[in-house]
Length: 98
Image 1 (cartoon, one colour):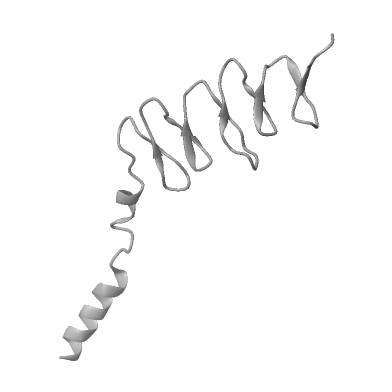
Image 2 (cartoon, rainbow, N blue to C red; image 1 turned 30 degrees about the vertical axis):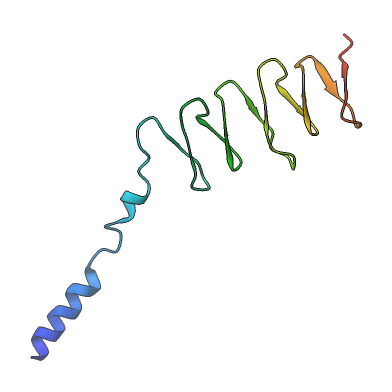
């Protein structure tokens, strides 16, 4: 009996623990898996904080969140501004002078 018990314990001790781990990391084709566990797809395939945004948008990684589109691609406090402008402290923007 001791031999059977020893063999069983040895088998259990060397059994790999990672046999199910790869299944967790699989992301379906056509879907973007985000770091926090949610997924993005369709018209909003890009991860942006806890949300999803369109492909040509800029994710605003600040307290306000959200995103800006290609016409106003720069995040400026709680809004979006054109690319050739400067964000001001009051939330507005100024054109860059060359």
